[in-house]
Length: 183
Image (tube, rainbow, N blue to C red):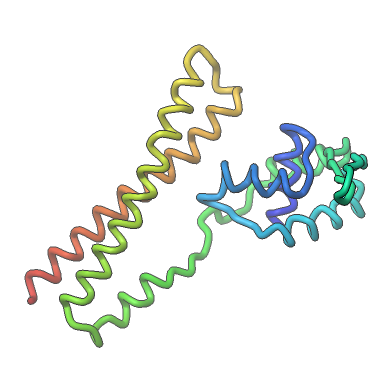
């Protein structure tokens, strides 16, 4: 259901094809929400049925025509209502395969588990290298703008990604130290 509102939110920025929506998602919100192209097209069809989006056909030579979607007035109203209707519980239940593996790691050698933590740290360090330039770029774009600008809110989500990655790296390093004590 959330994908529906993500699509409406993105169409608030500009009209796009399903493929354009996928590319936009991959370049912006992919670090906290992802979707397959097939899911996006399925949801666009449902949104069209609800009257939340309209589309126009753009003919192409030698290729299928493009459907370019726009948010309708009804879609905008539904999107704003969704934004205002915060859930009672804001934290989301998580499924974390890495933690499940740690939970059962008494079956592994401590050295092997340390290697898994080191791999996790490397993975998170790569994420930081993605987030940090995005954060810097957004900060530069914010100079002289107020908090009503979309960039301000985009930056808040990037700050969460930075904070999460740094926190997880710290936790993983502490776990490695604990494991080294019992080697």
